[in-house]
Image: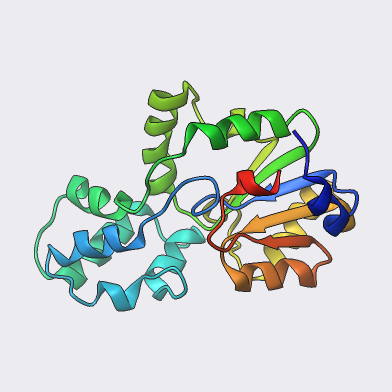
Length: 212
């Protein structure tokens, strides 16, 4: 599986593809998490966490500056009453939906012709929870069995849209930016990647299968 003829003319001779996770590989519903926390009485959640804007609490979690335990305790402080770790995690993970099997098959096909990578603003709670989904649905222990390397923001301490995270990936995996394609569903991340010389594709209301 390769880029379509039209896309290949646009992107040039691409050898490496970096995929965002949520909204590109996995379907996401931010409103599901917002609604779940509102059930606990956290009515300000839609101002604290959205696709385009996150409160410092969530940024700190996604850059590994606070642990999952600290994150849960600070959520409880905002909620103002005791809520179990399990219930908090269920609410926080509610946004993480499915991966259509066709997308997983696409990734398996792309591995034959490209070096493929995953780059995500994410956190330990989401990653650990999603391992169960990958195991149950696809028999995989982690995304590392699909991608050459997986870059999670909470592990490397950097986060999109900062250009530093793209520079880190390029250097760490020895990628030439002009030979690298980045696919994301958030425009500001696309703009940042392009500042580092990476060719980018804004996946706006499209499925990744459409460009291959």
